[in-house]
Image (cartoon, rainbow over all chains, first blue to last red; front, top):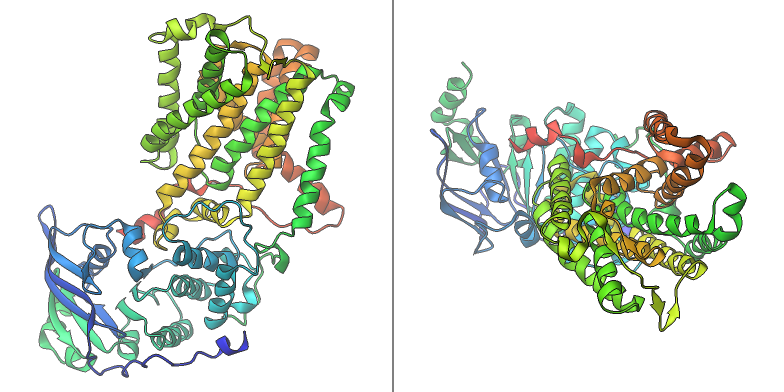
Length: 273
Length: 356
């Protein structure tokens, strides 16, 4: 157990923040459109997310960031366009099937199983990886020696929650609930993690801890798309930033490039009145 | 943050998924002893042999119902469809075909299988209160059909009457034989429910009650697990309905009535939802009340029962089992906190905000 406490950057460490990632795309979005009544929520988005990178999506309120994320996990069906994950289309698939392909999502309010112990929380994710979307196995008792429970313990150790593994999840602090949710995503062996404002409402201290944690799981080769308002988070983490405004990508590049872009300033000022 | 002390209750490490086989065996042994000896101790409390059999019937029903309501958090108001459906199939086999209970058992379970697949498939398209209403609607449709279109088969308002004495390989099944058959079925059903509770499958069911959305976003087919829980609980209801007709070879229209569905809900809530023991105690309590207490206090028994129900819901949301836990704690033992809500029934505003 001791060796899992210290994460080893075995799989190619990500390039430092601010360097445009190169290499193959894990996610390709092509010509995505979504209209709600008279509102063009998503306007012809084209986006490639490089494998192993941290890709931030920023933009003023109502820019379509959450809608975009919801399209990726099948919660909203886009009108036109194509979403390819690892080269295969995931458009129109049921949500749990998309997740089974290796995508996971972290919500603004941490979504966990409140009345269950941390071990149980993470074991559920490990089981979904081991047994797939459904398995009728009511006979075998779930022992501590079970492969899924063992995996849960080791993941809890990685995110620094091992000491509290028997606590019921609802008693955790908000920052620790976020860690638990990330542990659930790690145990499900997600290849692409979607984070919707992971540090919203957190203190600077908690925010920095979350940034450290997100870096840590990047070292394991997990790709991330982060929606974020907090520029501190974006500039500490992301290698690439896409700026959304009124459903369209108006700027795209390294954080430095994006920061100097006049269109971005205009979008933010325009959205502030 | 992890250095912060956590105020919540801490479970002993052994409780996290690990339940020793020895402990399970002991629980089952004690449970079997209490159930099997019921014909000896129930008369001391003013009960009678037939009441013990009725308690078996309803306890089987309630244990299965707990897999759906207590584990999975789905409140069905239409389980009379499976109880009554199985009772009618059993009665039909006894009246027109054979008195062999094995034939009737298989036929009634096949009937429940078809019925539960259809009603579950349609009702589980919705969650929360809408699911409850759909199950109620399907059960009421069956009740109406039994009285009208299917009256030639069901005997309409008169119910299904028969002169048969059920037999097992030619041996007549009456009195204590029926009780012991029911007792074995209850012990078996209880063991199956405990096994489910401790399995990976059971963990998935319990997590549906906790947060179905998180489960969906962990790559699990929540609908399939709900369907499985629904089918299992329907079969328990079917076994109970079958046993009811073996006990008393007559099928009352009441078996399909919504009040039958309501009764099993009351038993579960009064006893303690999600505890398996609780609904069994609730079933025993309600049957005892309906028979023994009614004989003692007359027609007001329903009033008194209503009062008991209200008091339990307000002061003991965890049912009689919570009372036991309180006494246990008061005598200096450690008890793990339980939550007694059914989250699936509550609109979660946070959840909706997130998806917006």
